[in-house]
Length: 342
Image (cartoon, helix red, strand yellow):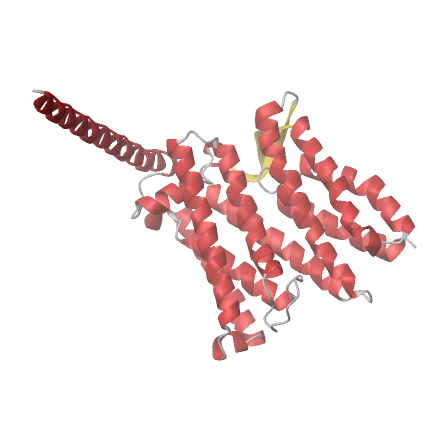
């Protein structure tokens, strides 16, 4: 009798387990199907002319930059560098893993889409530089340093390739890509999510490359380290601004997008003073490790004016385009300090 009871209990547990498994599977299926439906509702079923045009422009820019890079640095293709290509592969895998993990968390664990997009943006912004700083350079010198301009340009170029997989016709052929896209697709950014994300990254990298070119021309070779400063301000300052604003922001103000609904500097998007304050304090703290790269007067001017300048820049910058403005203004400020202040 006892054995029969145990067998029945086991059968009930197995049936319950199968029921839970089916229930979980059904829930996942419904969520994914709802994801496709929401994407169609937000972006339309057909790939329209405006989307084709933006994608074509993006691809043409990538091809032209590729041609220019190969012309200047043909050794990358003629003499493949295993270390360099390994870094590119790891960088790409890490970025797509973060995108998928964040998208999955948004769908199944109710991660705030603002947090998710910011996490993805920070990884997309920081990975091309941080992976190369932490690894050896292409010359095999065993020292952690900021990559040279050519290597950094190559690295940034490859950062944009995965975004092509997220365009409408391609992502809708894969559940994995749809989940990855959900990581950056904030409802308030539609239908410009990919456009704003990619153009912001392009603006960022251009500003960093110009700053690095200037710093590399200085007599003191150590000054090239300052190229990390705007990256730190963006990653930690602006990176914390949105989560802090979402969680604790009580005092709000409005800003506009660089391009929205067919017009420049239009749309109304909220920011918070509490979030913007993060930029001020992070800039102030981020300056400390670089004090030996300035004279006493230069460092004093930086401490007084750079945090305030970065805070105002973040507050006035267009929606989703604050990072390029932060990087560019920080670079101009550093140039001004070195050229003017004794």
